[in-house]
Structure formats: structure tokens, C-alpha cells
Length: 261
Length: 371
Image (cartoon, rainbow over all chains, first blue to last red):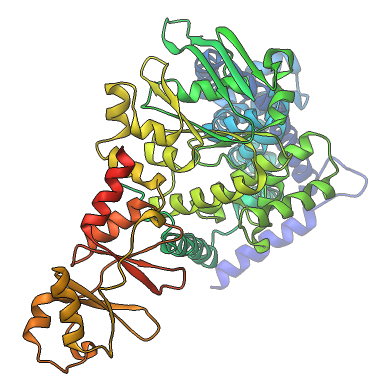
């Protein structure tokens, strides 16, 4: 027990001592955490910014989708570490060395979700929108994109967790936020504390990001959540009963007596 | 008025969906396009709001060629109800109904107030305004669909198999609702269905389409049932078209017999005298309020001792009744067929017995209709 306690308190002491260094903004755990957030969020946003128009194009011009999907899937099979090294000659040790490959991975995960989400609009809803007098652009903005939001955010959740964990790998090219704690300070110096702190903060960051996305989705798409509970099911059942009851009354007025064969 | 002049739709692969359609849809009336699948009825409907562009021919709405208008603008001026309602899943019931007024640039508050009015009109409760479509039953969703189509008060309403995805009980109530609405609103309705019963029920005029997109017959429901133009229409209209045609004749024309209707206080010998003298095998017993209680057979009257009141005898259930004022001959025939005595009991709106129709009288009435 005491050994475990000593181990944990040793890590906590190290974390507090190394949290930040006044006058040296580029050193310390906080600096690594902020770098980690910067690299992952910028990658995710760029990935999303490309996935949305590309997905729209794939829905609009159906034959485009299979080759595009195959192309991005091939990219996904390239090990991230190889991509980081491939980028080095062009982008050097700038953030882009990490961001470009990570944005590509986000794109790979998001694209099918954007396409599926947009295709998810039932045909009768699409037809109704046309018949109401929505032009193609309005239909996209007011009907198809809103209906696709839950599926897109589901993809965003997977992509963000994957990206946040993958940023650490970029530490091998000198970037990588919390990954640097794990690789350079922990692994190379045979020292537990930075590794544990790196893992805990990475997992924590992933959880917080996921929670923010879930909350965002709830705010953006109240309809996807309304009435999933028991009371709503009961309400729907009552509604069916009311429909039928309504009818028992009308057919009881004998006005349509024996109308069906 | 909507006119089709030689309208045709031929797809690039050579499939003929609609073949030279000439037809006039009257203003303020319900016209039903009916036919088996592949007969071009839905394609014809969709040509009206340019969801399908005709390959040849002209379609005019109130003498204006529809090709002169921008499709989106044209569609905003024509209500459209689709099968399965086609409601927007991400919008509340109220905002779904307000769709077209908002597209037309009306203020949100005005559009919503109008939507609330329409909810009432189609029989939805105000408490459902903030619900989302998936929280409603199929029948309620379709009511929202009808309200949405009516929101901008378009003179023309296109309905594309709107009630075919709900169960038969709910369908009947939606049909009743549509008939009621139409009495109030007098829209020019074009209604597509594959169900001839629905067509006969709702249509002022019915256009029967045959496979290959040709118009087979365009007539009133009554004439369609009485005189189908050919074997196709006859078989499509159904084997019991003769019986169904009776729906168009009021039961009020039947002669009702009062002399075989007796009170519970009447004695056996009185009923026997009336029944025997007439060779009527059945007498109907009613209570003091003239509600029917049941039939008593001539044989039972013969077997019962004199002096016994009819109320103390065992009665045969009277079966179904028909409303003399509002029902059709078909309902009267149905009531007779379902009655254990083979006779139909005619009642008034309060359910009080007005008289009995024997099979002979019913037969005579049916025969006179067929003349």
C-alpha cells in the first residue's frame, strides 16, 4: 500500500513541480498540453472543413464517391509515423508536419459520415422539400445538412479521439504535445512520472473533447433526442389509440357503412 | 381548372410513363387519378407542379402554361401531400406546417400563428405544436402533412397516395377528415391512389389509368361503377361494383313497413294476426322509446299462448340497423344481409325504429335503381 502511495505522490509532486516554468513559456506540462490541444483541434477543424464540401460533392456527383473513398482509405493505411517523416523535408519542424497528416486522418474518418448523413434524408422527405418549393441550395442548407448533423458529429467524436491519441506519435519528429512527455522525458530517461502524466492528460483531454461534442450535438439537434424516453413511447402509443378511437366514432355514424368490400 | 393537352412523359430508355393525356380537372372539386402501378397516375400528378417535366404536350393551371413559371415558385403556390407525410424530422410540428409561408418570406410569428390555426383545422391538439414528427403516430403525421400543404392557402392541392401508409382504420378517419375539409375549403384537389374504394369515396370525378400510361375512363364515380367502358376498367373497379354502386342511392327511397313493428306491451295474438294475415315470417319488437329489441318469428308466435306480452318472449337479436335519413341503399342491403331475419331495420338519427324493409321491397328498390 505504502509503495503504491509513494509512487502516486511522487508523480503528483513531479507534475506540480514541472507544471509550468515562469519565464520559459515553452517548458513544462502546461505548455505540452496547450501544444497538444493546438495540434489536435486545428487538425480536426481542417479535416472537417475539407470533409464537408468533399462529402457534398460526393453526394451531388455520385460516381465520384467510390474512387474518392478508396483514395482516402489508402491514405489511412499509411502509418502515421511514416507520413510525419515524409512531411519533414517540406514542412520542417513546423506544426504543419503534424497537422497535415492528422487532418488527412480526420478527413478519412469524417468523409463517410458526411456522405451517409446527407444520404440519410429519407426520399419522401427530399421529395416533399422539392414539392414545397425548396431550390437545391435551400434544400441542402435547411433540410439535408441539419438532418445529417447527428451522423457528422458521431464521426467527429471518433475522429477527435483518434487524432488526440495520434498527436503523441508526432513527438518522434519533435512535435506531439503530451507525447513529448511520454517519449523524450519518460521513455528516454526511464522515468515513470512523465509517462503517467502524459497518459492521464491525453485521456482527460479526449474525454473533455468528447463531452463538448455531445453537448454541442444536444444543443444543435434537440429533435434527435426528444422523446426517446419511456414517457414519449407511451405518448406515441396513446396517439395511435386516439387515432383508432377517433375512427371507431366516425365509422359508428354509419355514414360509411359497409364501404369496404 | 387544370388542363392536360396531349401531355406525355417518355423516359430516355423509351419507357412511356404517360401517353398523350387529355384531361380537365375542375376547379373546387376532387379529382382522383386511380390505376394499377405503372399506369402513370403519379407521373401525371407530378407533371402539374413540374416535379416531372412532360416530354410533349401542355399543362395549364387556370389557363396559364406551367412552363412559364419558375418551378420553385410554381410549387410554392400548389399544396403537396406525399405518402408517409415527408415531414422534416428536425423541425417541430408547428415549424413543419409553417414551411411554405416562411419560404414565401412571411414573418415567422405570422407563419406560426397561421400554422397553429391549421393544426386546429386538421384536428391536431395545440399541445402537439412543439413535438417532433417522430413523436407522432402515422395518422397524426399525415394530418400535419395536410396542414403543411394548406399553410399558404393554395388553390390547388396535389395528394400523392397520402393515406396508403396508414392502417385501414386510421385511413378511414383521414378520408372522413378530408371530405369534411373539402366541404369547407373547396380546393381543387388532385388525389392519386391505387385503391378504387378510396377513389369512389373521395372523388367527384375519377380518372382510371391503365398500364402504359393511358387514360381508360374519366367519369363520375357513379357512372364509373354503372358503366365501365371496357373489360380493364370493369375488372379494376371490382367484382362487386354493382353492390358498391348502391352507395350512391339514398335509403330514404325505401318503403318502410310499420305494421310488423310491435311494442313489448303488445300481446301475442295481436302480433300473430298481423303476421299471419300478411304471411310475414318475422315481427320486430321495440321498447317504449322505440329502440329495437329483437325479432320474434311467426313460429314462436304460434307456439306461445294467447295473452302473453311480446316483452316476455325470447327474442332473436335484431342485428344491424341503417339510418333512413343519411345512409345509402348499400347500407340498407348490408343491414338486411347481416340481420338474422333477413330484414333491415330502419332507424332515425336517435336510433328509434321507423320501420322494417323486407327483402321484396329492398329488391324492388335495387331493381328500380338498375333501370
